[in-house]
Structures are given as C-alpha cells and as structure tokens.
Image 1 (cartoon, protein in one colour):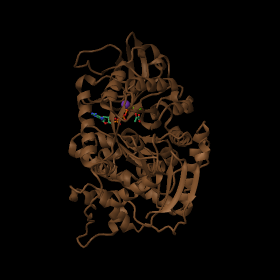
Image 2 (image 1 turned 30 degrees about the vertical axis):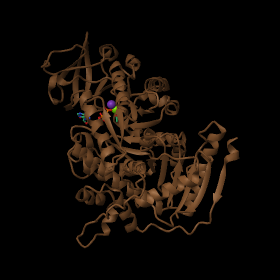
Image 3 (image 1 turned 90 degrees about the vertical axis):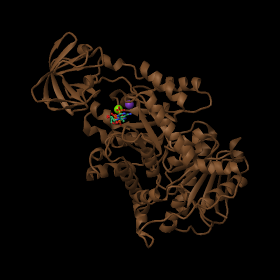
Image 4 (image 1 turned 90 degrees about the horizontal axis):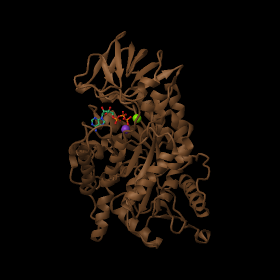
Length: 567
Ligand SMILES: Nc1ncnc2c1ncn2[C@@H]1O[C@H](COP(=O)(O)OP(=O)(O)OP(=O)(O)O)[C@@H](O)[C@H]1O
Ligand SMILES: CC(=O)C(=O)O
Ligand SMILES: [K+]
Ligand SMILES: [Mg+2]
C-alpha cells in the first residue's frame, strides 16, 4: 500500500538564510549563456530591475564566468538542456509573428524570459510555422533554453474575408455596407465584405447590431437580400482582414445555427496533424464549447503520437464555454482566458469577474491557466504601457495565474522585447510585494485526486508548501516522473522556487507553463540519496543553490518529504 512508503524525515535545519540580492543576482547571471556577454547585461537588468542597484564600477552588472561542471558528458548535456533560469514565478507566453520570427528576435524573447512560444494558425502558412518551430528548437538545443511551443487553432467562428488583399478598409458613419456570403473575385465591389459563414444571412435579423472585432466598428442590419445583408455603419472604424464578427440582439450575442459550427474544422485537423508531426508541446483549442471536443482531440493525439505527450489547452472565449466551464477544464490539461474573443461574446464588464473565476477554478482543479489578450495592447505602438495596463498585469499576477500572454504586442508590435520586459518586471515586483506582505497563506484547496495515492501526494505537497513558507526555505526540490507531483506543488504556490526534476523532455517543457516551476530533465534513480546529491552538485555548479541553503525535497516515487541543508 502506498501509505506504507510515506516518509517524513526532518534533519535538524539551520536557520534559513535570507537571499542577499547581490548573491541572487550573480547566481542568476551565472545561469545565462556565457557566449553573449553584452546582451546579457542589458537583459538581466531589465528582467530584474532591482538588481540594477548593484552596479560594478563601470555601472554595469557583470556575469562571472560559469563554473566548470565536473561531471561526465551526459550530465553536461543535461546541464546544457536545462538552460538559464530566473526566479520569476509567473510564466510568460509570447505569440510569434512577423515582428519576432527571425532567429535574433526569437533569441531576444528567450533572453527576456519567454517560457512558451505561441503560434496562431489563423495566420501564416505551415512552412512559416515550421521555420519558427525549428528556430525555437535550435535555441533550446544550442543555447540551453527550454522554451515550449504552443499551437493555437483557428477554429470556426464567424469572420470577414481578407478584403481582397487590402490591408484595411475604413467604414464611415451612415455608410451602407454589404456583408455577403457570396465569394467575390478581387478586388471586391465597393463597400462590400465577404463573410465566411454560410448561415449568416439566415441567422441575422433586421435590427440586429453587427460588431466587428468586438466593437471596433459597429453596424445595424437594415435589409436582407438573399445572400447579402445590408448594414448601416453606426460606429465608424477600421475593418481589418479576417476580423471577427458577432451579432447582438437585445443586449446579448446571438447564437443561432452558428452554435453548430465545428470547434475543430477540417483545416484545424490538418494543422493538428502538422503540430503532432512537429512535436509541439501544447495545442490550444479556440472557441471550445464542450468537454467532448477536448476528449475527442486528446484521444486523437494519443492514437497518433504514441509516447509524446501533447497537452491540450481549452481556450475560454466562446459564450457557450461558460455554461460548461468546469467540465471543460476538467477534461483539459489547462485553460486560457482568451479575453479578446470572450469580450466580443459577453458584455465587457463581465470579463474581469469571469477571469477571476476561471483562474481560481483552474487552481482548484490543478490545471495551469493563462491570462491572454490586450495585457499591454498600447505597446504595439508605444515603448511604454499605460498605467491601466500595468494594473491589469498586476491583477493577473495577484490572482496567481500561471502565465501571462502577449499577442499582437510580440507578434507584430514595434516593441516586443520591451513588452516582455514589462510583463517580467511587473510580475517580479508584484510577487515580491506579495512575499513582503506575507500573503502566501494557502487558498483553501479542495481535493483533486480520486485515488488514495493521489490524495497522499496532494497532502504531501500541501504540507511541503506550508513548511516552505513557515521555515522560509530557499527552494523546494521535487522528483517526479510524469510531472504530476510538481504541478500539485505549484498549485500550492509556495513562497520559494520549485526545482522540478523529471525523466522526460516533453514533461519538462510542459512544466514550463506552470507557476513557480523550474523544470530540469534528469535521468534519476529510485535512490533519493543519490538523486539529491547529484542535483545538489548540479545546481551548485550553476550557482542556483549554495552550501547551507535550507531546502525541502519531495519525491513521487517514495512519497516522501525531507528537510535539509545543502551540504
Ligand atoms: N503568424 C502571423 N503572421 C502574421 N501576423 C500575425 C501572426 N500571428 C499574429 N499576427 C498578428 O498579430 C495580431 C495578434 O495576434 P494574435 O495571434 O494574438 O491574434 P488574436 O486575434 O488575439 O488571437 P485569436 O486569433 O486566437 O483570437 C493578429 O491580429 C495579427 O495581425
Ligand atoms: C487569445 C485569443 O484567442 C483571444 O483572446 O481571443
Ligand atoms: K487562434
Ligand atoms: Mg480568440
């Protein structure tokens, strides 16, 4: 029986030593790739603004050369794979687009702390996406990063066509535009847009409001003529290619036959095959409406890609998903609060409370959650964010979301690196504030596990997190084969870094999305003593821990907790 193996061992701990900021800074600097010193200085000071208070006589932070690792080749390979780390707990997802798809731009995002690169299959062809995936993999292999790749499906909500190649069209107040399900040869007739959804002309009624991109432009339906719907512009604005369309009646979005649109289209299935073949780490499913589609995709992936383990993330952005929220999240490996489309399907003022509810529910159910869209929207054009944007980012960090996501800011904005550095520095600042105020008392967490041994793991993690906070330990070490124990620990949001060791490269990359985890791939044995000694010397060699540090170690093989000082 599993309980027989449970073990609580407390070796007499020395008082926990506080991290001197400079020591922490130098430790972090040692982790960065040694080959690009000038770049590192800049990125480090932006990622850790508080460290800038400790300049050398030249006014710059200087990284000490990495300590040589005295171990055999396999360990060195593992070390290279493990890459540079920061102690930021909140993870960062960047959408890659034309502004960031080049190797140098991608590397700048990696240096800036990107944990996951997101590819939006609404844009670009497969060749383009393949090149980006290759470039990310090269960064991981050559430079020691552990960036995961997330593919985001297109889905099939109603949207406009591509404007016959025009970059945008301006709709003026009072103009009568034709929204038509007919296809046109380019150039389109004047004041005409194509709509992708066949049932559109049947579903709308005269008097409905038609919103482009959630209200960037607004029309009123004035007449229906077969496949054509005539609309008067009531809020002038810019129409962008493939802009999303919603129609509203009596204050709510209308879901008629379009509620039957497939969540995963035939094009999405081809993209998913492509994602499986390319070995992406996450597939984010757009406009999820029910748990069934998630289960269906998960069994498809399991049948297609034996061995490799792609996580399925449910994007919560459809009004239909809100009625099945818990079921959807339970079926998924994580969720995204996709506020862009969500805000076009429900009144905007409802988005913040729904965000909070989803973040909390995900934590209850032990699923990672990403808060996405418009976090720093103004930085698409400007080098600094608005104060309101900073407050929004702070709120998401405060809610203890696992990850924050950049969209247009990194895909096509003018300041992708600056936007990423704002996410990073705001996260660090809010997390520190939280620590100083000792806000880390645990949320009352309900059981997630149904099995007895699962419950034991859960209790071990809750106890370990409590001890970590009370004893102010320097780090928690968790040895976990499938990653589950690491995620249970992350769920408790303990007040210290969590070093997670797993045998599997794909588990390691997946853990990258979860709050506070610093995942390593390491071939470990059932002998905890030897695992501990190996990982201690590994991390000491990289300056991530030092002799005397107080740490807690957990293992899902022994289901044990140990408290000790690093020798
Ligand atoms: N691969 C790409 N190629 C060209 N442009 C891109 C690409 N990816 C993103 N973009 C641009 O960045 C903008 C924002 O990107 P993002 O992918 O986050 O869009 P979104 O509309 O928020 O997401 P979704 O389509 O999933 O709702 C897009 O509207 C598009 O203009
Ligand atoms: C990210 C996304 O799909 C949205 O916010 O709509
Ligand atoms: K998408
Ligand atoms: Mg969306």
